[in-house]
Length: 417
Image 1 (tube, rainbow, N blue to C red):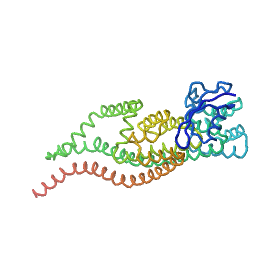
Image 2 (cartoon, one colour):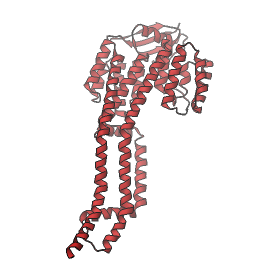
Image 3 (tube, one colour):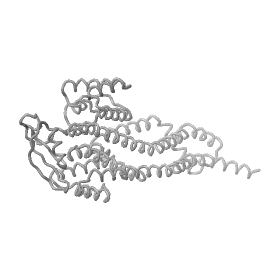
Image 4 (tube, rainbow, N blue to C red):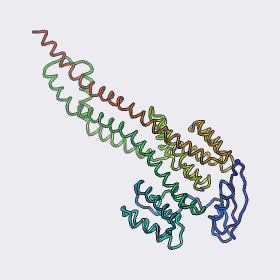
């Protein structure tokens, strides 16, 4: 039988390595999991299993040739995953389950995708390999968890866990949207109203003031100058604004731009704390789900670094994974990054020592999910009066600047009478 070399952690944290024989790489993983080991790396299989010989496990790789596919709504993916879990646990054959779900899919792109998945499985591929051909529908975390489920023989349980994870991620996304939508819409409306007044309304008052030969206050003169500039050079500054937005968007797609963008997000007043809590919650939830499903810790960290949603956190997790690869702990390098609170890093360290890392990570995620919800509610109650104040200042200030000379003119007329 093929021989596999492995490196893994015991529950106490000690790193062990050795070799074992198994028919397939999946069987080797299942054997190590039964021994209570946390797999760090697995390689070999030259004797006939066709496994990886590059020193890194091919079972949990996140690279390879992949086809592009249309995107599918998150809710549709949750329903598909839950139905798959139910049908498999009920004893329905895998191919038949996928074909049934493909027939009832309302999204034509998803229907075509499931038909290809079914055909690939009939051709002899594993489910994870077939799903991996459609990365825009089934991301790395999905494919790797399915691989782990296939290896452990608990695919239905892993799919249920995956559906729970998808629902939690969708709820978190909804919390962020609800926190950001109101201030963005309000700000756009305030700026739009102010711009409309400056470009189309205020210039009409300018003609009236000069025709009446009224002495204008300094604030009114400044407002009229700004209005004249915006109206006269409307095309220039609007084109410049659009060009600046396009350039900024392209810059933020680069590595340096992503770092700057995410650093600014974490340093933003009011919202910085929210973004930090969201990143920690995503890290803990994703990491916990992957480990519980049997994905080796290094493969899990690689996926987590790509899904935490913040480049600074991603870099910190990648650096920490190098420490783990060398047999060191995970909690210490995360603590040195200064991005993770002491409570989080200490709970991770305790989890590594006691062998209950996935349980403590789940508790961290639950805690920060609640923190995000509480922060969103606080921000909503804070932003509403703040935006009303901004609108009152801008619009009210312009109205007062226009009416000051009118009041002055009325007052002078009353004095002459």
